[in-house]
Amino acid sequence: GNSVTQMEGPVTLSEEAFLTINCTYTATGYPSLFWYVQYPGEGLQLLLKATKADDKGSNKGFEATYRKETTSFHLEKGSVQVSDSAVYFCALSERQAGTALIFGKGTTLSVSS
Amino acid sequence: DVKVTQSSRYLVKRTGEKVFLECVQDMDHENMFWYRQDPGLGLRLIYFSYDVKMKEKGDIPEGYSVSREKKERFSLILESASTNQTSMYLCASSPSVGGYEQYFGPGTRLTVT
Image 1: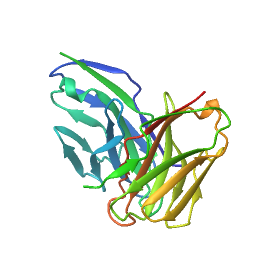
Image 2: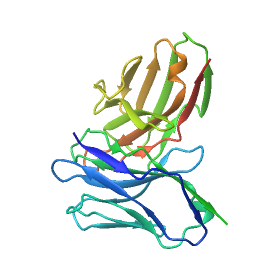
Image 3: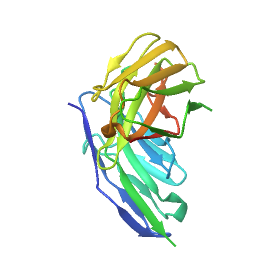
Image 4: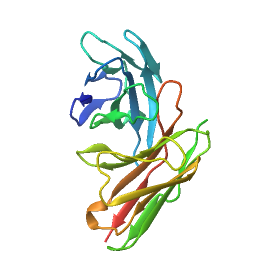
């Protein structure tokens, strides 16, 4: 079946460091891919998405490129801030109405000043 | 903006009680979902609904039921709460067309004692 694997955390960085969180997927067909972010005590917020191969999603300085050849959707940010400390989830959709997203287990990012 | 609201942020119940968690969305979405989130396990799908009065079991439906009498409202019911149902519960909604992303509520942290 379809699945998402993301790097285990926690990831601990200093402010202004470069961030990469790896995400790979297994899917039949052509899924849509997402990154969600969860700040402490809150629900999940959509951070960015990509719906086809070679698409790049971007938002708030974060980027991820849909790589079909490596089945990956790695999240990157050039310079992290303390306010980026959160849990990040990679997810895929099988692109069928009424189906749930398939999530990775989440990666905790902690940024110190 | 899409808004998904959940009836309580924090809830404490006793073992054996019947518990109702309510979720309301204001964007006329067809699909609604209930997940539970536990440390190390990520998000797990309990139930989802793709139309009024329709429901589908997710990965972990045991001990739960759901109700969807109106399009905007999706209720999760714990028939007889147990301590292993202590968790964070997240509701989400999505449209049947478009990019397949889901929009999440703030979550309900349920403690069963």
